[in-house]
Amino acid sequence: MNIDNEVAEKVMRWHTHKYSGKIWSDGKGCVAIKEHYKPSANITQAFNVVEKMRERGHSGILIENGGGLWAYSYYFSGYETDDGMKWVFRTDKNTRWCKTPAKAICLAALKAVEE
Image 1 (tube, rainbow, N blue to C red):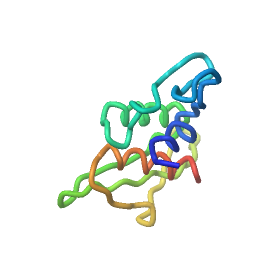
Image 2: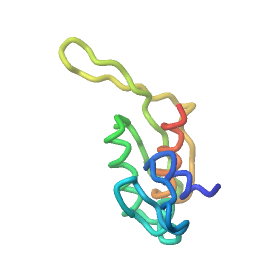
Image 3: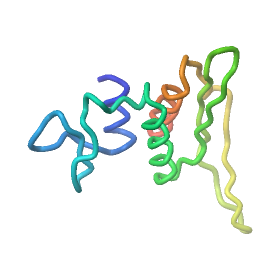
């Protein structure tokens, strides 16, 4: 499976439309044409992945540029204290590198939903 299809299924929670194998559906309607859904290459679509991750409670995707490469990692869900502060954790073992910010977002999101 390619990264874009994995993001659609595992992160966005979409499935192939029942009448057309060429369309992604969210269960309420058509949301994207498969051949045009490329969040690993399209930064606008990648930021939709970020929004979906926020909806799912994963607010800690981190991307940063370093020496022409993009680092991506994610924060582990933390805990909420009595005063309502939410703490999150990041460890260096979660940091990886790739060539574009869009791909970095997708890889971080996939890693986060696998945990």
